[in-house]
Image (tube, each protein chain N blue to C red):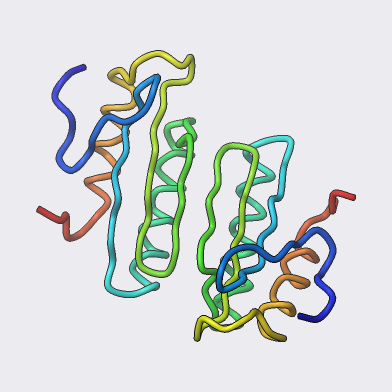
Length: 89
Length: 89
């Protein structure tokens, strides 16, 4: 797999991309969730799974055909990163 | 605990309320997610965890203080049920 966007890791079989985003308050979590929804709608893709609570969002991206994540998923991961005002180190 | 709203079950220690909602298409999933977000914003509560993919939404409701789910959580569960146009049997 190509280099992963910052903060993402490959997980599982077949490998999926995974990243956890943490926020100070629910308001920030909500803004991020809405931005991810708008982005995926614009791109016509759906993350395999998004799991969220008050101050966190865990995102799993899997390729549509079950193969290793490719450029579509890597690009989506990078664009999701760009949605966060404050990207964790 | 009082009678649970249709489709919900008690899970875990301390017990939380859990229900899985399934949909035909992502569009329906999205409408439901947005309705849940609007409802919880209106009520000033946050579900403990919502996990969703293209055609499903799993919701866990836990009391704020870690005690057994009470009237607040039971009411929220019933109101979430009411958001679904087609409640599964």
